[in-house]
Length: 542
Image 1 (spheres, rainbow, N blue to C red):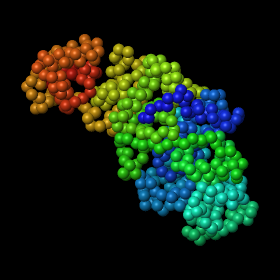
Image 2 (cartoon, rainbow, N blue to C red; image 1 turned 60 degrees about the horizontal axis):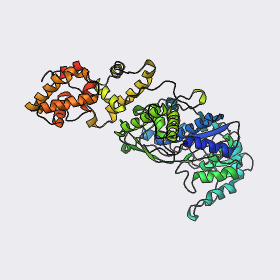
Image 3 (cartoon, helix red, strand yellow; image 1 turned 30 degrees about the horizontal axis):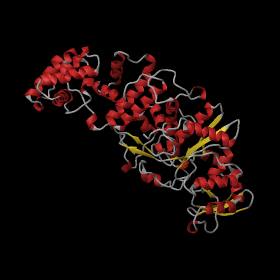
Image 4 (tube, rainbow, N blue to C red; image 1 turned 60 degrees about the vertical axis):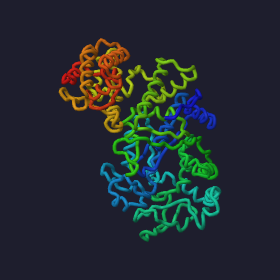
């Protein structure tokens, strides 16, 4: 994760203030996001969604009424079959169809588009995001945009000039150009050409794929659609959008946001929304079946297997949108949990920050990281957290042979264990820890305790076996008397000395006897985390 911004103010609060400043006092502010469900909605797409959510929360914290809309551009053309989709050959039969008319290759939902929409709409509530969904296929087919389409036709030359303004001579529009396209009413494909417009509502076209030819009334037509660079600003005006971010590709010089800004003002008489550019996200390490070589991508559901909802929000709340960063599934996961825990301690005043500005910054990031926002306000959770380091939790789960209930029970029975109110958050973290250990963690991090009587005799010298016996009889037999890891570690080194071994050699022998590896978790803490009865049972063979 990238280093957090040094300024005290959070970027979402800065953006909220800018929206109010540039758009003036309004009864309702509209913040927008959206995407074409042409394939898996990956974590890079999610960056836009949560960036808008954070700004929406910041506006509501200022007492503003906000409408958060999310547009599914499911009336876009199905141009390409992603590599990670099943039934590739079948899907190819629907190329050039509107995405909403492509069948779901999994057979779960009514269409290919709806399948990807449902995946996102099911996952977003888990991270506290609940926008109002707009389905563009439905809206176009209901002729909601008839006026917007006619205005585009009336300003065809203006639109052409705006688009050409950002193109070199080689890429300027050549010949006759229309700002609309039509899905054929016979074969459903967009392989149509516009023949004429009567200056009112009649649009004539023909299909080069099937030969169909019609004159359509824009007010009732179901297949007429604006091109992307006109459709986007048209909907800004239609929905009265005040804020919408965009990726660095759209925000490039002369890119779609530049043209949309001009179209919005010059054709639709609406000032473009306040915006910012968000950067790309990289992926580090593997998460189960995810593989870029096979066309797989990481989505929100994949992220939630490794990170709790609060950690997912923290990844984005703690990083400025225009900063490129990497989401990890490898050992860096431990560090990210540690960073979150430190922010949490500062927010709850369990750890002293560098200064007041650092406290306010970390507290605000922590507030934005929380899933629940009672009455629309961003605030601290009601229950004080119970912290168990992610690394330690992973070790405890492996000690419990993957049994989460046993893991939580061991923590509840320990001094200073979690209260009943703290158990849900602890359980959620434990589920993520179990998944990460089993599916993502490097092999050297994993271990399994030996069964009683399962010796590592062939791998240990006589001196090492004697050291293991000394460890069993002189340290583990009274393990409960050590108040902390430090005193236990001192006893371990004393045992090594008494056995005529270096500390490292004793540790290796202990790990071989317990888990069949040369290395493992920090030995003092490891031994104190396992029941004495179990340790004595494993080492009884020596």
